[in-house]
Length: 280
Ligand code: PAF
Image (cartoon, rainbow, N blue to C red; front, side):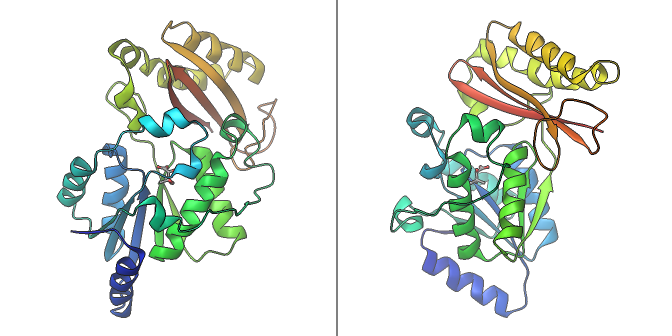
């Protein structure tokens, strides 16, 4: 496994592989890797000749300076995990390497980024689009792997690839959970013991909401989800929305056409956790 810090070196190596007719798979990450990331890397490894993983804590997608400052950075442990699953290249650039000049691009995603995470984290998805589009043009992967835990991020990346005609296949991968149901996240390591013990209530509630959806209206399900999670003194729901699974716009009746998704953001102290459930 080779660790690369510059775009020039990365591109030279990838060009060489592509000349030999090899397919390139890519997993973009911000490091602090857990089993959710490793599942993406394993799938990437299985489906491509060359497996590239980036580790880059992207400053432009943080709308909260404290969150950026405290984002866990565990480069050595990350590399050991990636070596164990046979990643070929780890691309770990500096901020100046990715952004030699300020990135002033503004992406247009219609209503997709105006709701949920987009509404509560202004500028977040523009920052994600900036870095992911840059990484795609640096790595030029055939396939790129993203987790479904960041449901809205995945929808935005699919829209970016389609609307900005970026030649890459986006592969969605299922949420990986701890044994008690908590969705894996790099932020979980920042939870106190009490917050960690309370956090599985989020996924338990989302799972229960699938049952509630069989007999209750959307308004009633939303109320029950808020009540259930907020019952824990450690947790506070920022939003819970039931939306059309494709447009991500809020729906108010189960009878509306199409699959629905329930997306939640919850504060455990200063740590912000997200999760989602699909109603089929
Ligand atoms: O999901 C993440 O870890 C990040 O948003 C991503 C896609 C690596 C872009 O920085």
